[in-house]
Structure formats: structure tokens, C-alpha cells
Image (tube, rainbow, N blue to C red; front, side, top):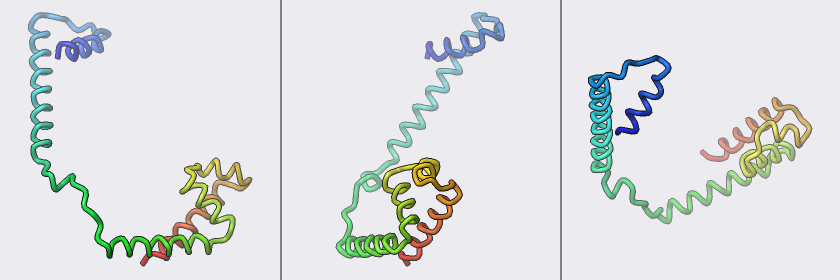
Length: 129
């Protein structure tokens, strides 16, 4: 807490704050209250979490099957895209390239990249009911 008070006072040094004993006492008291409140909030938050809230749940076989089928439909939708559209989509989503990098690499405009991405995303959304 002393370090926090010092940092706050150092930050106000340009204001030429008058460092009287009462000012330092108030600053220390307010910092202590702030730390106490922060610790109380943190403790309450940690105590309110139950094991069920953070425990992972195993997917059911039906969920696994549905997920696989959905993945197959999305894969088919991506494969059915025109070559440039598919390439733009995969460069962005699979390889993490930015629109600017894709535009530069494929020698197209950024707006073309945006348009191709929109087309690919709409195709993926249409593939998943």
C-alpha cells in the first residue's frame, strides 16, 4: 500500500501537492480502504464459484455425431466455393492472414478480399441450418 501511495504522490508531484502529515495519512487510509474493498470483491467472487461452473462436461455421442456432420457440411460448402474465394477464406481463417496481407499476396484490392470473405461466410452459414 505504501508503494501505491508513493506512486500516486509521485504522479501528482508536477501539481506541487502539499505533502502535509494529514494529507499523507488520508492518502494512506483511502488506499488501504481501496485494497480492502478489492480483496473483499475478489474473495466473494472466488467463493461464489461452484465446481459445476468450471468442470468440463463430456459431450454426448449425439453431440459428437452432430458436430461431425456439421463440420462435413461446412467443409463441403468451402470446397464448393470458387477458387479465389476459397483461397481468401482459408488464408484468413486457417492461416491468420489479415485482409491487407491477402490483398497484397493475391494482388487484389482489400475490398475484393472483403467481398470474397463475405461470400464465403454466407456459404458457411447457409450450410449449417
